[in-house]
Length: 264
Image (cartoon, rainbow, N blue to C red):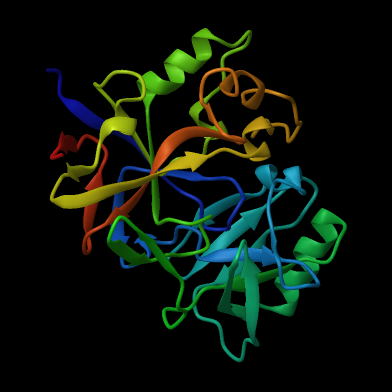
């Protein structure tokens, strides 16, 4: 049996904006450090994503010692401080969850509202917020991700999908946190518990794919793939599945190059 290796680590500091590839990631209570700790909400305090605003795929983020640097086409740089003073505490809605968040600043609201052409406020999830992910007897606090702290996809699964497409797609269409190689296509569907380095992870639920996968992450253009093709062989009921959601045990460090051991 070949060795399974972690080949990519990705974080997405502002939900639905461009991701950042990292070599080493600190795994905190809610997931990887900085991952989806910020999110945009509309006038109804409901989350905004690429589903309705594909232009978010063009918003780039860099992490500095005390702030995020946010850039986008035809926009000046926005600095988002890690420490928010006097921010309004609001209840925001993400899917079926209502969770406490802190408004970042009027400057951030003005920046994103101008860029998107519609009302958009940037909020931050404080450590005191309570949002629980639970499955198969395991539970974990979770950030502004769709439902779970982490998502894993194997390179072999994408390679198999690409053999079925007229034009191959990159992994960034699926926005995983962990990418692995050394296993067969969809091997991650068969895992229950894995070790990545010294961290134990529970594979808890297949990832239901949405229209974000049809957004070109470099151009913000929308198409029909890969959902059209995935529906021909990865559909269950009305849902299409690709990748697996994870809950982690405790804190630790993940590194590209870590061996991924299948425990169960």
